[in-house]
Amino acid sequence: MEQYETEEQQVEAIKRFWKENGLALVMGALLGLGGLLGWRYYNDSQIAAKEQASFAYEKASEELVKGEAGFSQAKTFIDSHSDTGYALLMALEMAQQAIERKDLTEAAKQLEFVTNNAKLSAVQSVAQLRLARIQIEQGEFELALTSADKVTDQAFKGQSQEIKGDVYQAQQLFDKARAAYSAAMETNGRDQVLKMKLDNLAIAANG
Image (cartoon, rainbow, N blue to C red; front, top):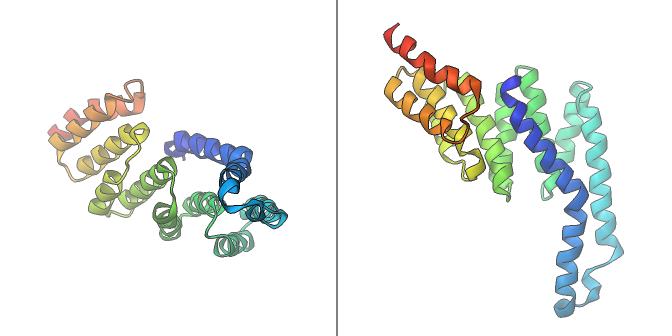
């Protein structure tokens, strides 16, 4: 699963940010509205709901790796907290578990949930990239290109171009693959795997 290593680190950063700042952001927004709408909108029940969601997420996350029962519990959590950021994080974790279980259909389903509901471009981009890789594995090359094209966050554009290169190489469209890999190298120039892909195109084209 090394191809997901960089994205996993990014997801972990998102999770840490949400855990450390999620409640504070909500509190800040509510306090900002307080002058206009009154303090009554900022009450103990709202704080308790956030804390309950956080606790439930941590528990479901711990159970997820324990097999089918944990997987079912994670689905229940998403259904119960679908309007929160925790549901998106859980869906990303479920997708990773599904990939490890070789259940690409389930993984794609969870990633589509994230792409359809995430508000942060970084979260959307991570999900789109993972979804595109799954679609390549499933032989759905046009869908993979569409998913890669939907990546809007500039920080992920290099990875998006690399995925396009993988699709074009699989389709034996070597000129397009070279252009995509070259574009990816502009932002990920130190990526040795990417450089190897680009160097191997000549061999593939003449093979």
